[in-house]
Length: 590
Image (cartoon, rainbow, N blue to C red; front, side, top):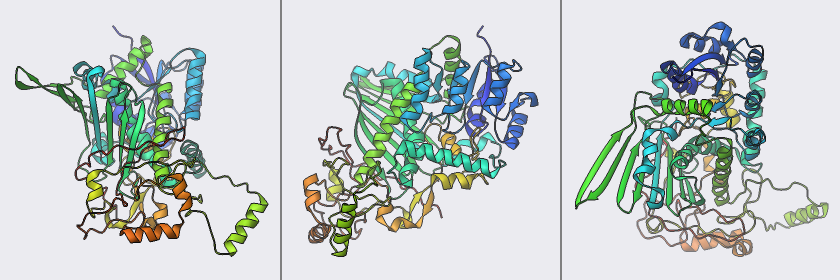
């Protein structure tokens, strides 16, 4: 009979109460909760009472838990860490005790941060970290490679529709968020979180870039990449990226990639705050077969995934459908049990998380470069003679620099990369020939969620999501984003009225065709404006006139794909993908 593992739950936030604790209670034959850690006295007390954890097994910090383990006053075989993204310091303390840990993503916000964990594992020669991506272990996902092998793979299409938290966690009866912490503690945690996000996104990133990085990429697209990696391996090459609607964060994200064998991958993630339900669909194509997988949210433990396969046999199209016997969260915990007891390697650990965050950083960089900016901060040290020359040029009314971006850096212009090389952007054929049809955010206002501001706002209330605003032992609002988007979600965006200023937009839409580096340098702003006016083009970042029905010239490109620039300075011309159907818009929150 399998051994019963003593589990310490660190962080009594949304994911712990909606996903992990229900499984641990149901699988009493494999697991026993012997300790709960949360820095919020109120949430620690309320969640412990709900889940039957005695007062002697409650701890305020990881240091208190480790002291109790060292004193042998509590028995712990493994840990689930479901706090916010600031995991590394707590992780290293636990790893030094030799405790295996199931970690809620993201593991960290930068390669350097995650490298501390990966390097420790390499030094000890033992894997101790398993990432908590339940759907990697779903029965339907496991059968995908059995039905269509990697060598036969033609295309993988993975789409997620992510609503606000109510459809996901409304039935979990999560206890209130931890707003009973001292203000100085909350302020320090916000500062630490902001510093980690800045380190991961880059000093040149605007606040909107950072919000997109955290709420759209690390907590949304990362889940899709993890599922793909468990079946067919990681994305070997990023082909193209786009983000829409304009000014809406996190909005919708679409990635085109290529696997090692040449098969193509399309990942689409939509945040639709007023959508009625969560939806996740994977379609896989081969030359002979078509497979479709439907995955429920991990928080819906009573729902099961399905896999359908269509193929032609003896001239007749046949379809077979199979339903999984267990939920993905329960299967993940079974895999964690095997990881602790038998050393069975997980699909995703620290090394895989480090590779993943590097790819997501590349995605963010591609989006920002398409907006004529860079994630790297511009140097501030200038030669005094240069300052005098600049002052003289300013006095003469002349300038050779392009328009400034919101973060104070000079924009290189659409299609240019930080190293001065050009980047080709190819518009979908239907988009290049159709007039109007702009995908502006409703009311012309964009949406964003300032990382620090959102954290501060959620400290005193549960926020618009109606669920726990802080996960685990951190008490910041960013935790809610990290936990509630466990597989594909993000916090509901707040809206700002400054989207009328195009310089504040972090969209991927390239409104002009690609320009070579030499042409971008030689052309003056006045010449560009005149050329655009002669061609009848809309100004940059402005929607096309819906009233027009004539064919547009090739100059304006609406919602074009953005092709990542190559590291050696060469440019890659994007393909001409078909334009998707009616794309959903994120409704603006009043």
